[in-house]
Length: 303
Image (cartoon, rainbow, N blue to C red; front, side, top):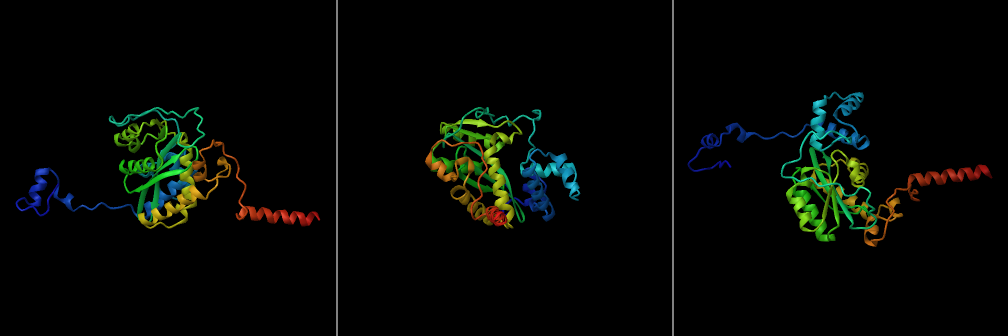
C-alpha cells in the first residue's frame, strides 16, 4: 500500500494519508523466543497425553515440573497452537457470520468401506525457531492419509490445497467430516465440498473425540517422528513428515485392519472391523525378542 520510491509523495505524506504511524513501516515482527518455543513443545506433549487439560490445569501441571507460567500466558500459547480442551462447554461464542456450521452426521453410522467418509484436521508442528501447522485428509475406514500440507499460517488456503489434491487423486467421498475451525468452515472449503456433491459433517465444539482416528494419527506422528528429530525448518519438517506418512500408509500394520496397512485396506475396498484389537508384537520388535528370551528361560528351568 505504501510505495517507498514514489516520485512525488514522501513516506511521511503517504503515512499521513493512510492514517498510520511512520514507525510501523520499519517494524519487524519478533518471533517467539527459544524458551517460549520449548514451552510450547512441552504444552503440546502434555496435551497429547491429557487432551482434557485447559489453561488452568496446564498451568498446575507445568508448575509441578518447575515451570513458572501464568494462566493468561498458557491460554495464549494454547490458543496460538490451536489447542482446546475436550469438555462440554457452553456456547459462549458464535461462529463467523459468513461461515455455516453443519450438523454431525456420523453418530451411529456404520463406516466399513473406503471413500464412505473422509475427515480432515489441523495440528501444530514445532520446529527449531518457530512452529508450523499441518493439515491431513484421511479416509475414515482404512485410515489412509490421502493428502497433507504444511503451512506457517492458519489461513484456509493450505487446507483447500490438501482437499483439492485428495479429490484429484482419489475422487470424492460420500461424507466429509471436520471440526468447526474457521479453515474448514470457510466458504472456499465448504464450497468445494458442495461443488463435488459431498455431504458435510462437523464435530461438536470442543469434541475432538468425534474425529478420533485423525487425532490418533497426530499422536502417532508426533511420538514416532516429530519428537524424535530436531526439526530445523519447514524443509526438514516436510521431509520427516513425508517419510513417516509414507511409512504409516504402506508399512505400518493396524490391528483394526486385520494386520493390513492403510494402503492395503484402502485398495481392497473390503469391509473392515473398526474396533481396535491388541496387535501381536512383530518378531523383530524389542518386546517380541524379550518375550522369546523369557520363553526360552522358562523352558530351560522347566526341563
